[in-house]
Image (cartoon, rainbow, N blue to C red; front, top):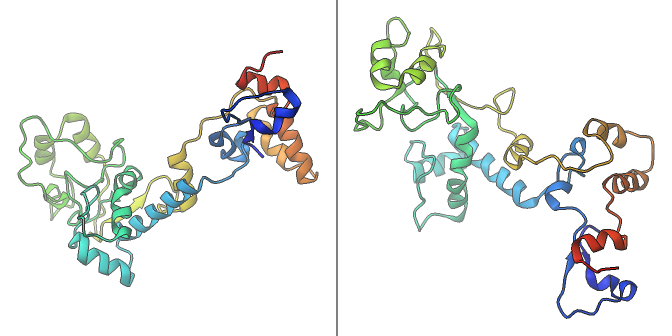
Length: 265
């Protein structure tokens, strides 16, 4: 429907060419945009599959209480979160896929610090105001203690940040952000949340659109704000699709084909 082989038009336009060409009226990246942006909300299965693998990684890293998670946690992670470590050659195909998506998962997840005992200072994401969620040390600070926990930056009696230690370890901008992070008065388990979701929960749908980050299509006869009104019209779907094609000027006229294949007059 959207990728029309040139041989279909050979009789109409008189083309004789041994090479196979395709005229694609609209790129798949635009067609798979949400309807509110002028697309048809079709899903790229590769991206859907990636989002579902990310959900498996989310369930593991967030400590979901499931038997298969406990098995993978004990066998591959050794009860310690690993975001981007290379999997062993002998690892299962499932685990290799989860590890491959670990770097993407870290981009949208952050720990809400409570006790700080389960969050590593230099490896885990735990500062929501930072773009990468993980701080950098001051120049000259040794990272010999790679497993240093956030709990070591908190006064156990006052349940507040140890400002002297924080200023000593982090650059001034990041130190200010850390000191502004709220710490609960009663320590509890540190919770991993998904920042793109308002409830902090991981959803395949939000993750799909987060990583796709579609660009708005251009050169449409309908402004972006009116697409929703088009699809809400009380018309048959085939008529709505016809209007959609008219708005994008995507009918296989010879003038349109000529823009891509240079058929001449």
